[in-house]
Length: 113
Length: 112
Image (cartoon, rainbow over all chains, first blue to last red):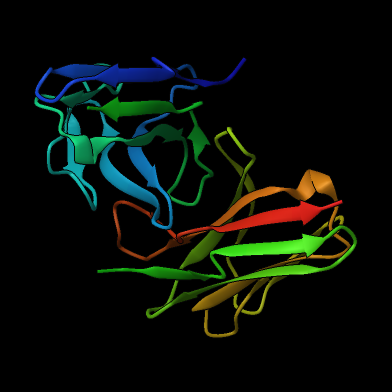
């Protein structure tokens, strides 16, 4: 089944403790992206990747890192999480052109205390 | 930067009433996509509009793209409880590597 898999679904952590949210897709998509969703703000792009070893900042990249060593994986790294990074995070991928639809993972709800 | 404004933020309707959400961009879009997110779920692609003045229908849902390709709307006729969720538009801009900028979404509640 074609899908984007994120883990974990829920995560509670403390300020400053490094964490990684994994994202994997099995559709051989070149483009992958991370979004955060906050009430009233919609989906804001954190980072995106056009292909392996090619990543770029989105609208809200501060406090986040990503890597794209393999086509299928696109982990999101929070080196020193802070409470303002408490949010719902989605990974997405798409194939083909920029007009192809995005396929989203199930989301990761992160709480930073 | 590129922004897509979406209104309203919330909408409560009685089952059977119609619903419309609107998206507007200050600059011309190359395309616009619509997504639906059910409560507790993830956004799921509904449709894409590309041509100026384009109108597409999916059963009770009607999607429109403005003549100037700066605005779009989603209209649901005779809402049902299964329509509950948040509807997002996402605008694409020519020459933008990110391809899509999402609106803030409209959360639809349908009262039985």
